[in-house]
Amino acid sequence: MNAFNPTYGQPRPRRAELVPSGEGLIDSIADAITVAIAAARAKGQSLEDLTAEVLADDNLLDGESRRWLSDVVARTWEQLH
Image 1 (tube, helix red, strand yellow):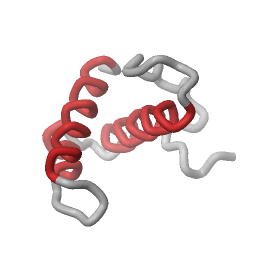
Image 2: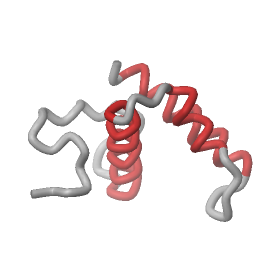
Image 3: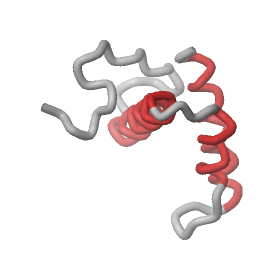
């Protein structure tokens, strides 16, 4: 059983085609975004809630990177809708 996949036992949502396939790291990031969206939806969160979490200041990403990631999350949210 995959305890980290909130959609376990359900069909996995189709990953948005954000980048060409075959680029392992980028594919992993895209998969992580898809899982984060599924988890947010399972908790009843809105896109605005998830965007606020992505934009929250942290030590991992600079402001420009957080804004870029927020945009990618929003586009993916809409594609998986």
